[in-house]
Image (cartoon, rainbow, N blue to C red; front, side):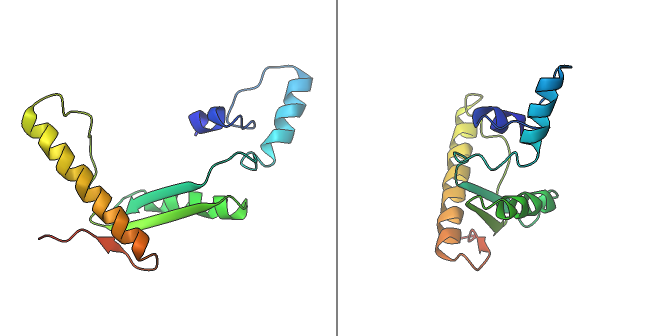
Length: 124
């Protein structure tokens, strides 16, 4: 979250403040609504039904909603995950990464077309 806050110049409790009273007052003021920055982008989050941290994603979406930030939470079934940065290790790993990326794109396309349903990748 600190990287996101730095990128969009969001002040508040995410950053340690110095001991100066003026800075403390400014940081306290910014901490009241740190995500109301007008340049905060549309936020799209995708998570899987079997993700052990799904409740964190739902809580984050709820907080964005409460702050009137445009957002969309996608919940998909059997969403692949892992490390896609090891394609350099071997040709077969790179091919597997490409398959996973294509599978993820298909799931996201299906999910976008059926916003009320839970999307999943077919096993065919």
